[in-house]
Length: 161
Image (cartoon, rainbow, N blue to C red):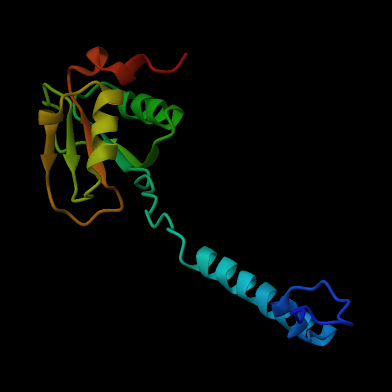
């Protein structure tokens, strides 16, 4: 009987390995292609990541306030102007109101559209939001504060130490 084994074949390589003739340059090319693919995938992943596109809302610009004496007490507009400045408000003018018979302090919004700032000012002054009136008027000021006879009851009256 004849033996089916081949004589003289000393290699113990698997049959698929005998057909592979891989050169070092081919390995280098495959390595370069592999690393390029990794870089492209990495860059693509970073390129298409979710980005927080929310816009930070800035606070409104400070109110420009005009202070007017509506009670007739000498120096009250100056005192309130100094107290507002102490609270970091921007006072752009002071003077006398059209008359001195204001029983209550009022705030006139001159068309500023700065609702949050006006609400904060009302709290700092110590007046109610319903004591704010709207008057569209050309002015350097955003609001006009008219000090009434109730000035001593206002929070802002004794704000400075």
